[in-house]
Structure formats: structure tokens, C-alpha cells
Length: 252
Image 1 (cartoon, rainbow, N blue to C red):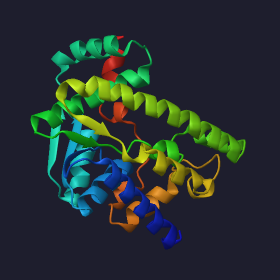
Image 2 (cartoon, one colour):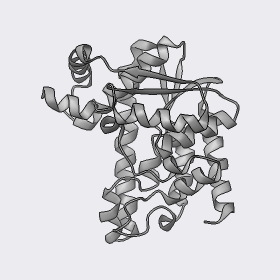
Image 3 (cartoon, rainbow, N blue to C red):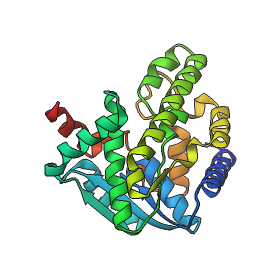
Image 4 (cartoon, helix red, strand yellow):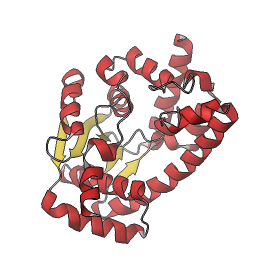
């Protein structure tokens, strides 16, 4: 992939981070996947005092994989193992607060509630996430069906995904407000969204058989030194990697 295109993307990500982060001491919600690892590495290279924050049930994929990837990054890394005894109480609290049975919203709010809890315990007031990458760079499997119908359908799906993600992140911040921690998504700023939507779809997804997707993101990750194990890893959503989805299904 053209290095100039990747350099421009990196510059735009750095600008989005600079414009949205209020302080130098931050946490990064970290699973070890390409999105969170790229975000963590860029923030660290920009001079932010960066601590990786990982949550999940004991022996969950995210806890084990994040440890493995941070062997390459070498950043401060804090892990919160979800307490099974408190999980039911927290899920009921979140569901009542949200006032919706939308499973994805509930799962993500529960996950970030624990991230914010961990951040507060460390004296962190800002947590950065890579939310927006899957929406803007065709990370979801649904984009494979959309691309069969043409780029117009891809852009229509992107707009719908972005609208949902922006609303969900507002709900997440409400759920985390009791900790005095702000969950910040630099890549969901209006300026970055407009830029990312201008990138050719062909640099994001190839066709309906493209199981990996997000090619420009993966190439940038490799360019700045993200381990190949992370850069080329297939998507595993936070609620699955942390085992929150599995445990929540047990209680339904």
C-alpha cells in the first residue's frame, strides 16, 4: 500500500487525538487487537503518559491476549478481572439506567463500566478508545454483504453504523459518569469521520470474500511497529473477548 496514503492516515489520527484529549495522563481501553494496539502505540509515541486498561473474566481471551501483545509494547498495563459475584448486580443496574434491551448496548456499557472502574482506581480521568475504526474502515462482517451490492450500500451501512456508535458512546459515558471518568473516542470526531469516509472503499475491503478487512488500518499498524500477531488478527468484539456476552447470556 502507498506509504504516502498511510502517512496521511497517521497524521489525521494524530490530529484527532491531539484535538480530543484534554490531558497527558490517559488510559487506553486495550484488548490487544489491531485497533486498540494501534491507538495505544500512537498515543505513546505522541508523548502521552499511557496506561493500558484491560477487563474481562478470569482466563478470558482479552486478558490473555493483551498480556501477550504488551510484551512487545512494554507499556504500563493494568487488568481488572470481573467479579462474578457482582456481575449480576451491575448488569441489572446498567439495564435499568439504559432503559433498553438492546443487547449490544448493554454489553458495551457493562464492559466500559468496568474499564471506568479500573481507571478511577488508578487515578485516571480519561480513557481513550479506538471506537470508530470498525465503522469507518469496514471492520464488521456486514460489510461483506454490502460490498456485493456496491460501494453505495457500503456507505449507507457505514452511516447507519456510525449513527448507532455515536449514540451508544453517549450511553456509555452516562453509565461511566459515577466514576468521574470520560470515555473519549478521537476517531468519532466529525473531522476524522469526514476524512475517513473519503478514503476509497477498496483500501478497506476487497470483496464479499474478504474475511480480514480494514486493510489500510492493518497496513498502518505494521508500518509503525504493531506486532504482526495483532495487526493481522481477525476481529473479536469486546463483549466476546471479555466473556461478558457469554456470562450475560447465562443470566437471561
